Amino acid sequence: MPDNDLKQLSKFLSYILRHNPGALGLNMDWQGWVGVDAILTKAAPPVTRRQIEEVVRTSSKQRFSLSPDGLKIRANQGHSLAVDLGLTPCRPPATLFHGTAERSLPAVLCEGLKPMQRQHVHLSPDAETARSVGMRHGTPAVLSIDAARMAAEGHEFLLSANGVWLCPAVPAQYLLH
Image 1: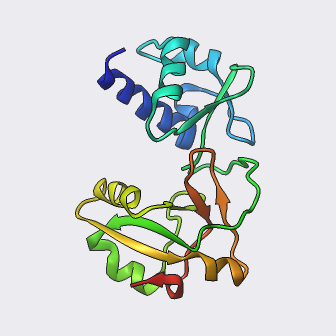
Image 2: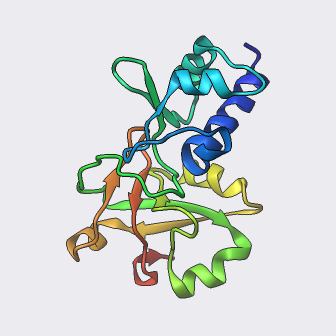
Image 3: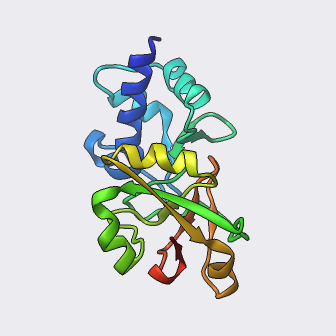
């Protein structure tokens, strides 16, 4: 499958598995799983199991996971819907990073990071990944987060299957500048 087609399929899967399974009349369980066969039956234009497996396997961002039996698929993070990914709280590295648009900095520095329409704030383990995330929103700005202090002061961190760190919010006092 050409790379552009894989990219389009990845975007389609992101939309239905993170935000709107109802767009295809799909049933999503409380952990975010959707039946692969249901997607194959309802997707237009049609997609194949092999194409879905290829997106899961080759996506550089590893946005999706297949269940061990290969019958279900879900997004690894980024949901605007309430799902329980079954992630266990864990200790983050001392510093994490968040990429945003430069135009958002005044509000973020004043109010901190909020999940907006998502369940969690997404944090990266390195500045380069955060920069690439920020570029999607305009001129990028990379913020450093004092994750060690946040954790020590009782804030919960989760690590998604694709290495993205998740937390409910990052209050402004933990932003390092």
